[in-house]
Image (cartoon, rainbow, N blue to C red; front, side, top):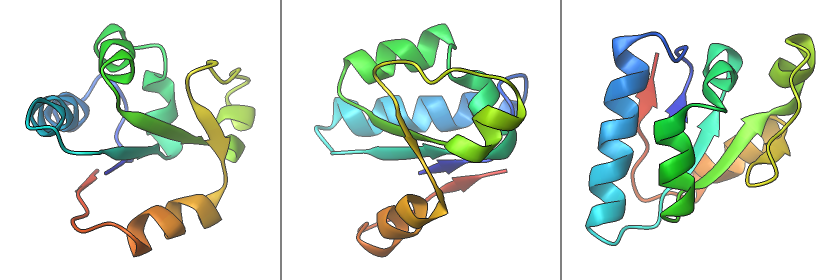
Length: 96
């Protein structure tokens, strides 16, 4: 999954619900937060989903541009990692 939308949008919330459903089914889910999506790194619901097994990466450039530190449970990564996630995924969902 890729979330481009900020945490104050319906799209971000929809993405987290979709992520929760996938984890509930036992799916392995990789999430990449891009651009405005990194603003949701400290979202309570996202933190819960990380604890449940979501594998989360966030755009290092977007975090740096916003003066944000990367939470310990999240991997700071570039677009190459996002590209790899997309390439090796069975299904890809993008939330703008």
